[in-house]
Image (cartoon, rainbow, N blue to C red):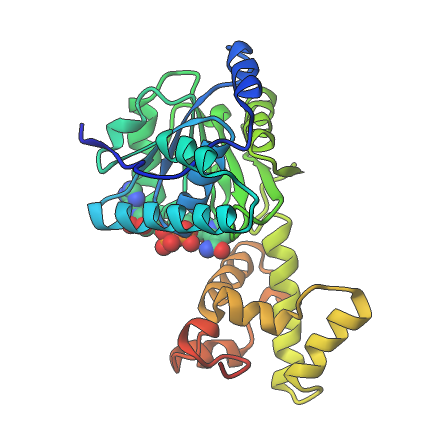
Length: 311
Ligand SMILES: NC(=O)c1ccc[n+]([C@@H]2O[C@H](COP(=O)([O-])OP(=O)(O)OC[C@H]3O[C@@H](n4cnc5c(N)ncnc54)[C@H](O)[C@@H]3O)[C@@H](O)[C@H]2O)c1
């Protein structure tokens, strides 16, 4: 196993030393070793907030370059919190000190909870869950951060579907308060409770999705809203600006749906809503042609400079 320690600067937990000690004293009740698979946008964020909360974190990705990108992102995020006076340098350093990185999945072997945050592709997730199932302890919880793939489908390749659960964090993880917990068809109450404990220990508030529907609650809601907004725009009923203003000023949304689509990525939302449509056959999730053509043309939103708006 190749494990490198990368905490050269900053950090400290959001928990005080006393709180961290008290949590450790809970022993079986609060597990403390976390493995995060995938050091991209979400995995690195989950590793960051967990380390801040006192968890020992092993972060796994397939290449050293991906791990370096992930840990660089964590360091810059901590730097911003320190610069704003929201975190002390010592606390940032201590949190970084709790994160180790590895390219070997065996680094997850002694974890109490594993959170998978790799690409949103069922075959990639299947390969990881199949391997983890053989690698980790019998009581280890295997959580997926998937935005839309049914947890039951992911759990099906393991011998422990009762210990597989959805733990859907939001981006940027250090800022967003929600964690959507998703029960697969066989997820046990204990698994859900342990995952809730973990997510709440990182300062998140959880909602529970009791039935494993594609897109869960959040991706279904945003997909339905973006699809309808794109259809209204496509058919010339209103401008992009006015559709967004309707949601902001009429409903108090922080951001309009077309601005949200540009920020998230038109391709990401097209993929998510297409998945939900395929699973549910519910017409309201059928993506409008406009979104397909935008993706064909490379107008993916903010990241490409053009989307429903120009950047
Ligand atoms: N981006 C978001 O806003 C968001 C929000 C909520 C949930 N999600 C979900 O989180 C998951 C990750 O999304 P992301 O945006 O962080 O993606 P990302 O592309 O930023 O990161 C994915 C990482 O997984 C790594 N990876 C691929 N195969 C791997 C393997 N076999 N082992 C270890 N690492 C591997 C990649 O190298 C990459 O670093 C997806 O399931 C996505 O749907 C994303």
